[in-house]
Image (tube, rainbow over the protein chains, first blue to last red):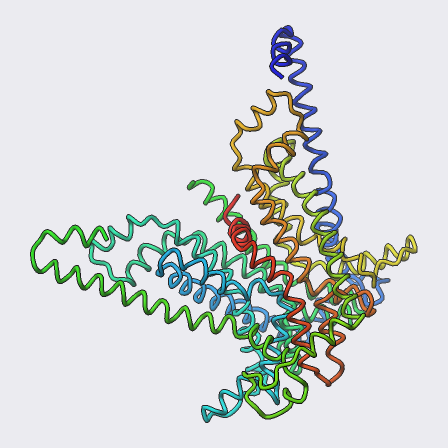
Length: 309
Length: 304
């Protein structure tokens, strides 16, 4: 190896420069070829379909005629559409807030206990996130069962009336949010715990000397230090929650009377089951604005983070 | 701690305060444990209830007894399900899809991440941002156009793409490739430049630098990305539900939901057993590789 280097050193200056330039262009060629499979996958399977769905949304049901904004006009006139918009926003915002609060609180509890026990607790608390959501939602469906609900059994034994978990639209909405919070809050907990660990201990000591109580330490020390991670996690989860499909599909399938449909499940019902692909595509496109805003904010946050470091 | 020691020297009043801080600490600890136990009960209740139900006979499930207890435990549900050819087909389909997707994704994303993190070419910075943005596009936005595109390919070439398990191999990379590339870029970028410069001086080519330096050094990141990739391809529900329908082409999550729930007849013992078996592979991997799993989770949003 050393010989090769020594031989290179004897090459005349001019030739070396040409060699270097050739090397640079060769290097970027190789780099491009290394990234080519990724570029192809992203272009063919993500970017092209995303734009294609915009084109699809402007066609009629048999996809033979261009109807412009006809599908959207049709949607705006339907009550179900506005119900879906309302339910999607309500579901995503409420679920993210609950997940963030629970994640934040549980992360503090885990952080409080001695370090050597933390791994065990963290391991148990993350299990809901690891189970495939479709499988755990089945367990919730069974827990919510109208005649054998295990929750109602407990309520009845406490002398309370059973709850029609999935039969009543309001309870069904609450149930969907509950399952989503159950699945998602462990992720928040892990992220916030990692952020908590990066808060320097000196800051807490300084706060303690100044006579801060536990709430002031959390509010004036932890929260500002964790702000970036809190924002990124919440925005990221907002995207995933807004696009959620599995939980609503299995738990209620949109019912009772379409009251719990979100964009993804309604698009599936219209597009795949109802065979009206353009209409389904138009519905799913309504996810796009909120996704774009959240993605832009996440990107800005990550850039800021890069500058701080 | 520092506060406590600082105050020790200032007489009797501080001694009292020292005691109160220690007591406060102990109280915080007990309350933390108390609430942690409550949260663990909440988080573990559904899987535990799945397990309880899976040990019951249909008769016991239908009886008006305590649903939280098993009076006559039996493994009959497991025996029934695992001796069903159909259920084993679901398992096989799921495993094949997951293995193929994981291999393809890891090769594609490691190569791309190496190129984007180190070699750089015209537009590579934009591409890295683009990868992150595509990772944020959810599958619920893509399944309808992809469905139409696949139908269109069938009309053009006569290759039937819908209703085959292997078509999922083309679909899952939309979810796995952007994320794995994104976290691998983070891991590769954290490797000191001196390492690959040293390899370059020793006469290594780019492929050798990748296989001999980057892959061994970034192995924890690769394991984390592989686990993520496997979990996603095992758990996905929307794509197989939209793209496969006949019973012999289904993967596990969809198979359990569509074949075990027949009309209004719910055989809950078997459904819960199936769900538990379907959740087992990710859970087992998680049990053994928890630290990698958590590292991958936090890397997604913090590296960059």
